[in-house]
Length: 84
Image (cartoon, rainbow, N blue to C red; front, side):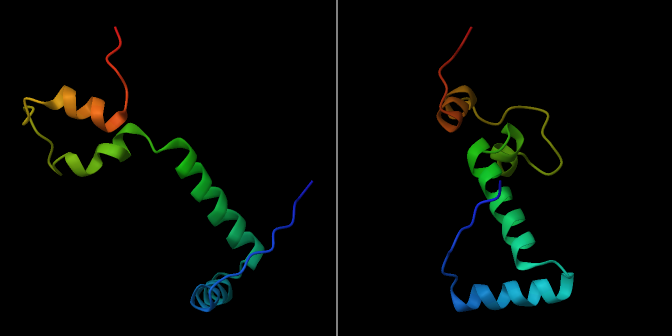
């Protein structure tokens, strides 16, 4: 069963939505459902480990670890204690 949501959209966002719908042929409902679903998926999962660390990885990779605190930094970033 589908639910109904009433939301106020700022005029600038509404204009962008209308322009996108006109270009793509999608309905406002389709676009809003896809956007909300994508947002909730990403927010709920926190992203995968690669996405969370992507800005820390050089574009050509690296042969050695450049920090002697890598374990400490990883624990801090991912909020987990060391498990063995």
